[in-house]
Amino acid sequence: MAQVSDLASLQDFDDVIARLEGELAEARTELEDDDALVAARGSVAGAEERCAGLEREQRRLEGEIDGLVARVEREEGRLYDGSVSLPKELATLQQEIASLRSRLSNVEDTELELLDSLEEAEAAREEARAALGREQAAWSEKRERLGSVVKRIEGEVTATTAERDACRGRISAPLVAQYEDLRRRRSGVAVAHMQGNTCTACRVSVPPSARKRALDPETPALCPNCERILVGF
Image 1 (tube, rainbow, N blue to C red):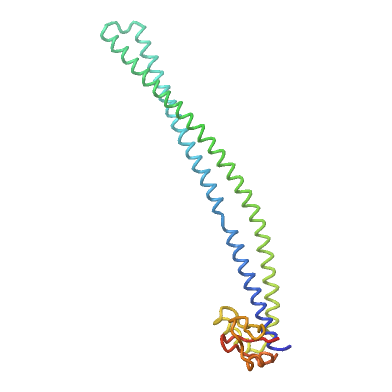
Image 2 (image 1 turned 30 degrees about the vertical axis):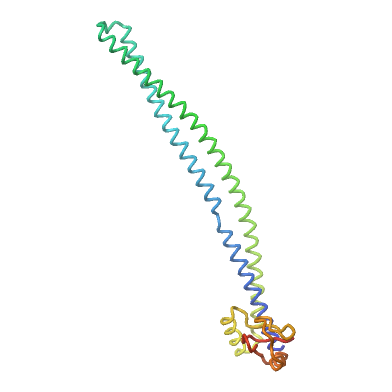
């Protein structure tokens, strides 16, 4: 088969492989992108930490309340059991009980406020967990879908590469070397077709002598402007 025609086919195969590899890279990048899932997990962790902190504070306040209640009961017992009889001592004891009750009331108010905050935090935690569940489901669906895409593209790359290698094997070593050199120097495009009198790669008009040479299926002709191999058929 004509060498120049094979060079054109080789360029087509390389273009297809480049496109497929680009699609494959995009699919793999998207497959590795789990930022939304990581963020959802972070939200759950933050919400759980918030709840845990409030629950610890609630237990501390309950312990403080229990201690204050016990002290009030003990001091009131002393007030009425006759163990304190002097007026001055009774007045001091009554002041102490009043102070304890005031402190107890403040702590109980603080606990009520905390319980409201805990209720809000628990609701936020449940919402964060629900959001995480949705993200996990979306991630599983995306992983399955993109996994299929990656597998399909890899198969296409393998098949196209086999065809490319077969085509390359029909071309002489010097022409392959020339082709590969042009691909390196010309952004991956070594072969250009003519459209009318114009090179499709550089969009510059090709003189008649070069157009005539481009019609030869065996001997490559180069575009005088961009130096790519010209195919005129």
